[in-house]
Length: 357
Ligand code: F6P
Image 1 (tube, rainbow, N blue to C red):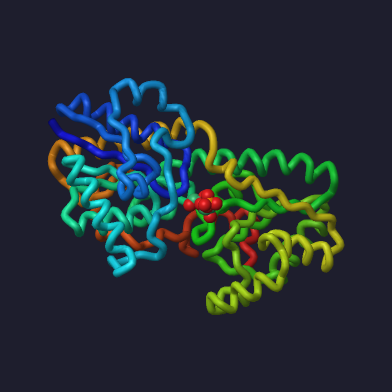
Image 2 (image 1 turned 30 degrees about the vertical axis):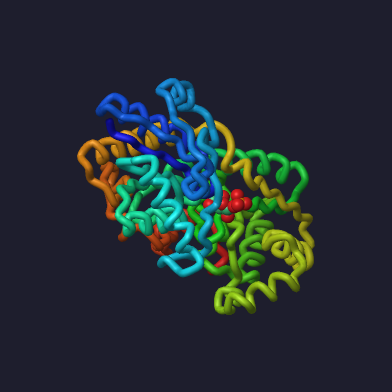
């Protein structure tokens, strides 16, 4: 019998259950497998919190949001190598793996999760990663599951904001998730026809934003929409040290960047402004059909790797092909939006401002 542990770690997203189901059902069908669900991410592996799963546990979960296994943020902050403080936790995880007599551990997660997964691989565990996140920022894969669903939700928010912005002649700012990477804001911004898109990878100047809005107003448009990533920064902020940046933002006394942009627009141009922050709605609910398909493809491949005893990999979509990438290559790297990204070019071509013109 092959004993497979599965855990989900980091922020949840639509598609996690679809991927869990795909791993489990494929494993049951391909091999004589026993599945153990580790609860609440790596914490469960440390604290031996798990449940023996039955085939029926994986029925009816394809369309369900969240994760049936529970999740938690990684218990190691900024961990690249095993530091003294983390040693006990790592030992505890290895212990649980051995005590449960696992043959393989499948971890579904984002960047932090992949770092941890790689550390466990270095400890000799048979680990397979699966790339989930609404941020789409895992290095190596064209797309992560969860992203497409979040883009749909965020686009719907922008669509709804459009009609009310139009009715009230307002400048409306929609702040979307994405602290370090702007994929979600870029895609939803383009899909929702935002006039200005601000993402962490392209530091903006307030002047450019004002010029873009003024130009739109002068062309006869009575409202504007800005899609702002939560991690968007100004050009001045981009060159600050972390400490300076934190102090500067604190002094701004705004809950987030969108509010200071909104204030400035109101002050400089006199437009009435409003800020909308959909927040965790972007991570909730049923996965899109695209994400269900992607999660099923990637999850099934994870089971294939286990069957072949090929570990130390994360499953990725590269040029539309499902492949395994070495965990050591993926861990610790972030896939950011590059300034020569096609979609940015298309956006500029249709007149979208990225605040850097
Ligand atoms: O990584 C997913 C994500 O939703 C980010 O976009 C966001 O910055 C963060 O998680 C929010 O974290 P939390 O759920 O812990 O508030």
